[in-house]
Image 1: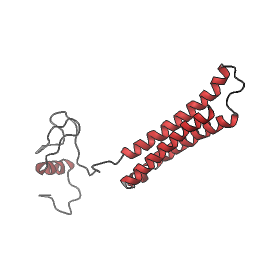
Image 2: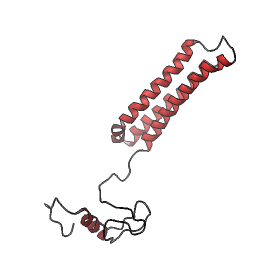
Image 3: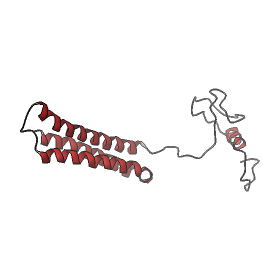
Amino acid sequence: MAGMEPNDTEADPTVLLEQYLAVSSDECPLCGYNLHRLRGSTCPECGWELELRIAVREPRRAAFYAGLVGLAAGAGFALLLTGFALVVPLIRNDVFGPELWEIGLLCAKGIVLLTLCLLWIRSARWIQRRSTSERWLLAIGAWVLTISAVFIFFLVFE
């Protein structure tokens, strides 16, 4: 940058921001005001405090959230249906409700999906580093597991 020495490691963040905006016409991330040639580190339109930082332009999170929603939906669906399979026969006084192994299978599916959901969250950085096609394949796999919970439900209550 103009006026900065390469070894100047203790530069004022406001000066760096001003130098950047002297040659760039970025907008305020909050209100969209054009910050070109801004003086200071506060947006004059909304008062938001600004800082200069390096970030990924596209966070690459869509597939991560799609997979997370898929796993969470599957876990919630399977556990809700487990409760349904346990309560409905009691309400109807139906001694011939679903078999215990069928309810256990549905409950196990919910617990597995819930565990995978937590692992998915812990693996966020790893998932984000995958290629776009790998991230979407993982997200599709999460939804396939969710859809399989629906099929298990229909097998139990056929």
